[in-house]
Structures are given as C-alpha cells and as structure tokens.
Length: 127
Length: 133
Image 1 (cartoon, rainbow over the protein chains, first blue to last red):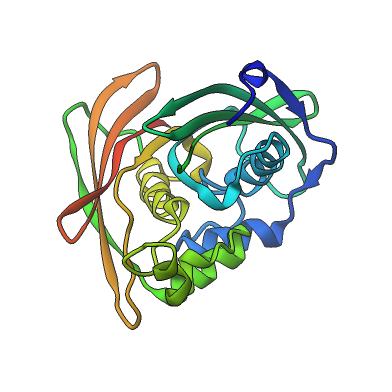
Image 2 (image 1 turned 90 degrees about the horizontal axis):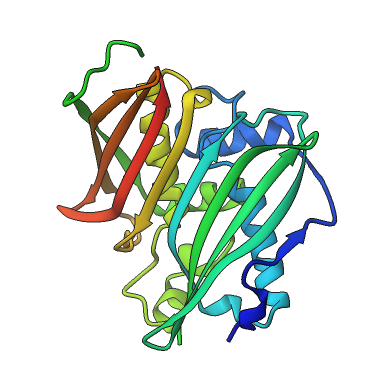
C-alpha cells in the first residue's frame, strides 16, 4: 500500500525528453491519423506513464498488478517535434476500494517553464 | 470545423482493431505489456484473450475527435474511463464504432460527448472532449 504521506507529493523528472518527429509520426500512424506532424491528443501518455511507473514502483506499488482506470488530458500547447519536455508527477489521491488501491497521478509535461500538457492517470492496483 | 452546433450528432466512424494493429501501437507507444500481444500470457493472468491497450482504444477515439476538430492541435481536453476491455482474438478484426454528440458551444469551443462501442458493448465511459472551433 502507498504511504499516505506521499499524497500531494510531486516528483520532478530527472531527465528531459526531446520529442522526435519519428516518434510523433509512428504514434500518429498507429492510430490512423493522417497528420503525422502534430502529436495526437493521447501522445503525452508515452512520456507521462513511464514516469508514473517509475514514481509508483519507487513507492512500493506492484506495476504488474496495474489496470488503467481512467485518463484525462488538458492541452495548453500541442506537442511537436523538437520540444524538450520535462515531466513532473504529482500523486493527487490514493484510496483502497475492495482491496484494490486506486491512485491518481497528474503528470505535467513542461516545456520552457510552462505546462504544455497535463495528463491525469487513474491507476488501479489489483489486490 | 466551425459549423458545429449544440445537439448535433456527428456521423459514426468504424475503426478496425486486430493483433497486428496492437503490435504497431505497442511499438509506437512503448507499452510492450504482453497482455496486449501474447495470448498464452494474457490467459495465464486470467484474461479471456489478448486485450487492446486502453490507450490504443482511447487513441483511436482521439483520432476521431481530431478529425471533427480539423486538427490534433485543436483538441484542448480529452478524457475517458476504461469500462470494458476490448478483447482481440487471433485472426479477427474487431470493430470499434465511435460516434459523438455536440453538447455545448461555449467560448469558441465545442464540448463533445463520445461513444465507443465494440460488439454493442460500451468499452469507454464518460468520454468527453473539448475542441477549439
């Protein structure tokens, strides 16, 4: 179980990601999106989920038991190739329901000091 | 697209989900969880069969929303709940049928409520988007 003291904590991503044109194109093509130059609305998950995994595994949760419960994105600035992104992840809530632990993480993808995209993932760690 | 109006029903679009598409999405997204590719593994963890990545299904719905908006760059908010897994048996094309209703036009944006169904079962719940007009 997640230490309740961690709710509200923000983990600042140690490394930055430079978004490549190839990664946007591959993601767009996988979704059948003809415009391969602008990141599709769900592209942020390729950055945010990896960091959420690192944070929650580091906090003792078993990633092999995880199921994605819900997902939300808010886009201030669409992601495009060449952007250098750092990701800050905040554990917004954690609760137990019928033995399952339900954790919501907000990941802010930051470019030049501004939040480009926020991604909220609710993750269910099955009992 | 600026000619949207409140109450408008947007024409549905059908997406095909199959095993090859899941491999392509896994490679593009980096999510290589074997439950999305390996039938034996999926069954060993209690699943009926291989299931699609929830984010793949949501991504296809995102493509539909981008198309309504006219560009991915016009999608301001997008959310969904993963209510039922999309089961993808071998050598099968599963149809994902996506449709939307314009709920409201406000502040230069359209609010959409979206439906995503496979075999008449709702696979995403609470699916909403805000797009720039």
